[in-house]
Structures are given as C-alpha cells and as structure tokens.
Length: 459
Image 1 (cartoon, rainbow, N blue to C red):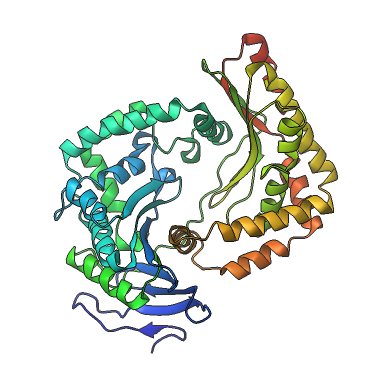
Image 2: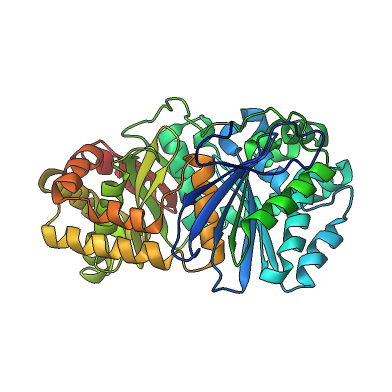
C-alpha cells in the first residue's frame, strides 16, 4: 500500500526492489515554487524546486559529512576529498570534468563546512542533463589516485597559506578554537599543514567510501526543471555507477550532534605583523533547530546586521574606530555561536572592545527599542527574499533544509516566522545570550602591555 502523500514510480532496475516515493512538500501557484521530493530505493533523496520563468538550473549534491566528522588525525580530510572529486573518475579526466561545463558556459564548484559538503553546477536549463551526469559521476566514480593526492596537497597547502594571510578570515577559525577548544567544531575546516601533509590516498579513500554512499547524500535542483526528469536522470547515473548497494537502505537522519563543550571567559591572541587588529568577541548561541533562532536573527540584525545597527553606528559612524564591524550567528546541530567582529588599528583595540562589550551588556539588561526591533524585522524579511533571487540560492535552501532539518519551509512561512517575533521574544533571547560571559579572539601586532589588558574585555 502506498503511503498517503506519496506516489510510487515505476521500477527501473532489478536491483531496486523497493519503489521510489515522491511527495510534494510545498505547493506553489501554477507550479512556480513547487518543491517535490523523491526517495529512491537505496536511500538517495532528490528534492527540486521548479521555476518555469527562468532559463537556468542549478544542480547540487549535498553530503552528510563535514570537518566535524573527522578525528584529530583526519583533520582536513573532508575538504581534501572535496578537491579530489574534481581530479578524475572512471569515465572522465580532470580536464574532461572542467571542459564539459566550460563548453556550455556553466559554472561548477564545491564547498566544505563543519557539518556538510556540497558540489554543484549552474547551467542553462537545456544543459541540465549534462550537469547531472558530470556531478553524479564525480560523486560516485572518483578514483582518488595517489598521484592526484600528492599534486593536490600542494594546492591545499597554498589555500591554507592564503587563509592565514587574511587575518579577517583567520580570526573566525581562531574564535571557533577559543570557544570549542580541541573539539571537531574547534578545528579548522581546511586542516593544518601537519594534518594535510600526513593524509594518504588510502586514508582518504576509506573516508570517501564511508561517507559518500547514497544514504548520506541529498540531491537538490532548482530552476526551469521537471522533477520527474531529474529523478530519472539521477537514478540512471547512480545505477550506472553501481552506487545502490542495498535497495532497502533508509536515508540517514538529520544530525543531532552531541553536547559540545563550550568555554567562557577565554582569551586567545595570535601575534601577527598586520596593519589592523582583528577581534571577535562572542559567546554561545543557539542550535540551528532551536525555535528561538528567529528571535536571535532579529537581535543579530539590530545589533550588527547593517548600517543602521547599533554596533555600526557606535563604532564606525559616531567614532570612526573601524571600517568593518558586524555581528553574526552560527548554528550547528547541538550548539551555536554569537560573535561580534571588528577590524581596527592596534592602538584602538581596547576602545573598540569596550564599546562592543558595553553595547552587548546594555542590550542584555535593557533590551532593544520597539523601533529597532521593527526595523530589524523588516530588514531581515527583505534580505531573506532578496537572497533567494537566483537558482543557486534556491538549490542551497532546499538541499540544506533536507539534509539538516529533514523538512522544507516555504518562503512565506519563513517570512511569517520572522514577522511573528515579538519585542519580548527578542529581549528574552538577548538576556540569555548576551548575558553570558564572553570569550575573545584577537589577531594583530599587540604589544605586551596591550595584550595583558585583553582580559578586561571578558571580565
């Protein structure tokens, strides 16, 4: 008996004894914005969002693996593997992979995060079958040859060096370490020079086989597409590669994590001969599944999300102490971070930190005004919609939602959740989050006397 809401599709392989299940998750008007999901025998999930009015399509595959899944010795393996999947398969060389998309004016890339990895291609709608074939081939048929591992090692070491040359980027890795310590969430996604140099082709191959079976993958596509055609093409590509080992396998559930140890009142200083001091002052935030994340999003926007935000006005507009100052949130399966970043002259670092700490303490105690909250809600609603105005962003939304939450939320529902945030909700979350003792990370050329005063910012 077929479950309600699902449509059984025809079996196309003798190996796939179970039936594929298709359901409509979000019903759009006249098909526009309709999100559908099919679960294939073998546990592969395929989600699509249809927009007939555009001429492009973005196709991506999300893997349920990130740097959080690495042991200390494997730190950097997920990102290393991301590079290697572009180096060649049983059917294509590295040049074949890149030239196939270049020949049709397409774009192809990938990114690795702490809890997932994504590979994607953006093409004209007529070239979607090519994008599907190439990306699926990369995910299912990668060779991971020792020569490629050795060559790519140099490129990854250069990427690490490039990141370390950008202290405005590097300070966020330092802050993660400050907050989480020697925990997978506290280690850099890229790994370190030592761990990358120690990784071998054999270890990376084992990592690949463990984390890239269909049950760990979500296929996502958005644009001028037909859901059923995408399903047929993806299914054919995976069956051609023999990727479905067990037709009865179920998709892996969204990550729930384990309670991650977070610290308070820690200070880490990395001395660098830079023109600016780069600082992140922050504290534990919320897990990505916490319903209060909508209120935290409004709080974050009002505090440091734009030119009218408190931190921008106090630090830059009124005093000219920094060019870049903002706040941000990061949500993981079981925990999160709230941080304030600023880049300033080393001589001004203590003034900037005092202003930021004073603002956080003031908002924790007194909250934000109704006008600030109303403006932040409007800004957040507008930026949410504007950020989804291309097929790549839509693919990201539905793919990440399926992998991380196991469900889809329409844009209208998202806007309604933001609009439903009340001033009391924001003040409550401000007391809880901003009332905690912060930690601090700093990169810059601070002298001993300056460095010794950093503890004042977290006292």
